[in-house]
Length: 185
Image (cartoon, rainbow, N blue to C red):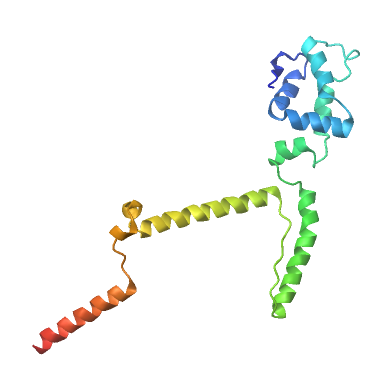
C-alpha cells in the first residue's frame, strides 16, 4: 500500500517524507530495531499538523537525527549510501580470511597440489562478477553469430557451406598440381 507523505507538516517534515518515500521499509525497520521507535508515531502527529514538540512523541528533527546516527550496517544506510554494498569495516573483516585462503592455495600450488577456495564477496563484487559473465556471454554469442555467416546464421546448417581446413588443403593441392602440369606441359 503506497502512502502519500506530502500531507506531513512541520519544519523537517519534507525531508523526513522525502527519505520515507524512497526507503520506507528500511527506515521503519531500523528505527524500530536500533531505537525502539515507531515511525508511525511521527507520522500521526506530522499529518495532524501538531507543531507543539511537547505533545509529539517524536519530532521530524528527532527522526532525522536518529537516521543520521544509524550504524553503518543498518538497512537504511546500506541502501541509501552504498546501494546494498558492505560498509568499509566488512571489507576489512573479509580481507583477513580471504588472504589466508589465498596463501593456503599458493602453498598448495607450490607443493604441486591443486586447491580451490571460495572467497567472501560483497554484494557489489557478486554483482560485478555476474555482470562480467553476462557481458562475456553476450560478446561470445555475438562473435559466434558473426562467424557463422552473420545474417545467414538463422538458416539451417545444411544450407551453409562450412569451410574446413581439409577443404583448404585440398584446394591448395589441386592448385599446385595444375601449376605443375602447366609448367611441365
